[in-house]
Image 1 (tube, rainbow, N blue to C red):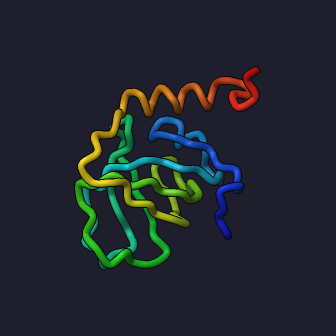
Image 2: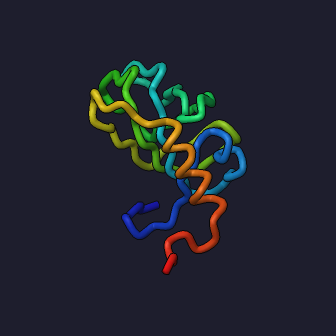
Image 3: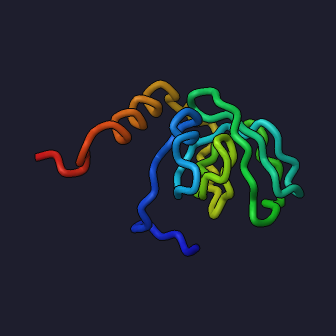
Length: 116
């Protein structure tokens, strides 16, 4: 699947990912375990849920303790098959509470992008 900025996807955390099986999503994850040569990465979402990321190919670098955005399809309640992994800037303190509030707003408000 070719992912573009126009490809609709849902922004999720660990709790809302469980409700998105088979859907294209974007999730922010703190990488807990990845050695660079594997096609499986373990991490923790912004709501502290365990997430397993299946990669199409190894990334080549260890990215433990770094935040990434994963765009892919939810294959199981806590597993995503990644189409793309975006490394977030090192040293940034991610506002997990604010991020989870944004996810709640985006997933519960109807037509949130069409506010007048």
